[in-house]
Image (cartoon, one colour):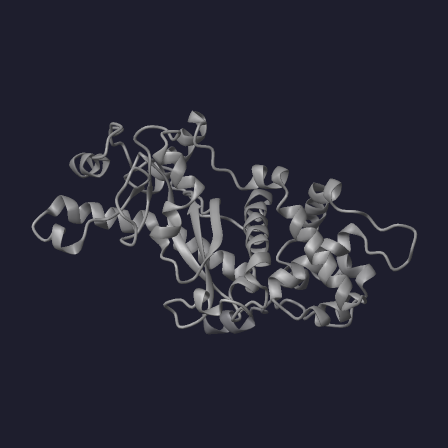
Length: 341
């Protein structure tokens, strides 16, 4: 038996010789190296170029003008590595000012309303949209009235020149606080990254457009988002019970346990987003006004990656777990869920 084991030839992948690649032949690189540099496959990059084609100017007859493909590649390399623009300029054979202009142009194109409406959707008035989101959550949890999870994420930045103390957060650093709503497949549906790190998650949520959709009655009755203990239980967020309230109540403890399991998807989405685009993981050198567009561009690219199949979102169970009766539209939805979970 041992002789058979040692006689089997181990098939090892051939090492790829790393060499300097001219920007004109960047699409001929090895697939693994190309993906590690740009976070997308080469065929997916071409699809992104076609999506942004009406919003990006193409290279003219002058030899120093940059094509759409190179504009997208420069931006993806910058977002994926958080490298200095001078280093990226040396890789593509352009100057630092050209890299800065290209990044601004592509980020603005990704923030265009047509692109945002396609890949960052939060439709409170569409009944079919609400039913689809709630049925996806019912496959991974026992909740049937949940359409998404909401949570906050701190993005570290360099101390701004003016009003740097406003961005000093609980992590003992300067940061921007991003509030996001994620569905059962770990796709982002809504983000708000316009507040400094000193603001609490619940404060940002109360001043967001998504919370206003619930408070003003435009959302479908009985549906809620899941949030951690930092959020107050309201008409938009279904928060867990405090520990003292669950001491003598088995049903509330079961509710908190199922609540925590279903809420993990938003933390996983934040982790996947920061691993894919290191500009959000490391300390970014972008000032807060421009950082809002960069964060939204990264989120849209993350959703595009799930849409194109570059990376998978959260998988859903083939069997539906939740069969709870839909709660009525009142302020006691959480108590109804506890009774019928």
